[in-house]
Image 1 (cartoon, rainbow, N blue to C red):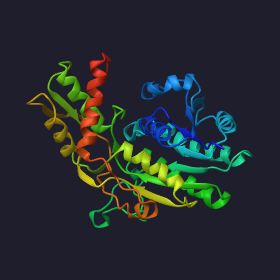
Image 2: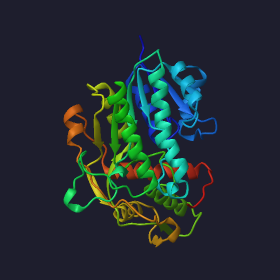
Image 3: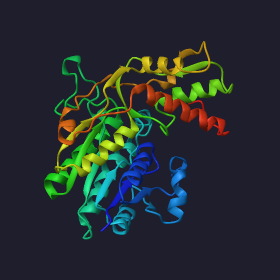
Image 4: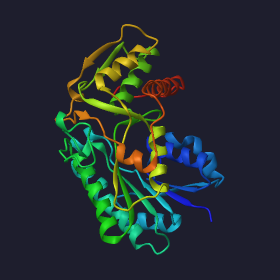
Length: 337
């Protein structure tokens, strides 16, 4: 019988790339959970298949509505669940902390409870936490292992600690097949324009098109990040649920190339077609507190699954910039956020 996968947050960058990967590399039927108001830009290329009912179905639901989650589980009866939906932007969590906590912690609880109550399936469940749980890590603790203590630097990070703990609790208390990931910085085409590398790429593409002056507005450029490609990330998520998944386990996943946010920006500027682009810090783009040293130890996951990142930093950044060039060339209009 054909396997079925439920992806929450399918309209996001990661969810849409995961759908692409599963459609290309498995024979699974894909069910994507999205809110009725979710933008469909990232999955636009999948809509003809969905209209023809060719292996992909979009289900309406919301992590704040338990009944909608029950109905989605009943309809999909999944063998695998990839729980990617979240309020995922750390800066927004400072202005909307209650929504962030509700969606990310209680929303995860609602989903896992809906799955637990279902009599139709007993899926392998991937709960996506975040490297932000580690927050402000002292240099002597680098690289960051799974056992590093949590020191969250935003309400988002606090919410993802809750997500992490709720997932592991359901594995231990209810014997659900939950596996948790702490994914470090991952990016590429379809990255939301509120995230640093994507807003930089968008601004550069707008500069190249003559839409804004040759100045890139930035926030904190000093934070260290280890970069990976979203297409490597979704391949890791597939291996997570198919290579001997161990309920209750938790893994760091991330790339191998580390540099500051500022160095990443300078690389993007270096591959622009416009010379002389300036950089200007904007107060509104600074967070009250920032996770500053995000360098992972990913040996546990690599040894368990054999996964390795394959796409180099330079390719990821080039593809991200080209993504924004294509959107702007198509006549799309964007805020300069």
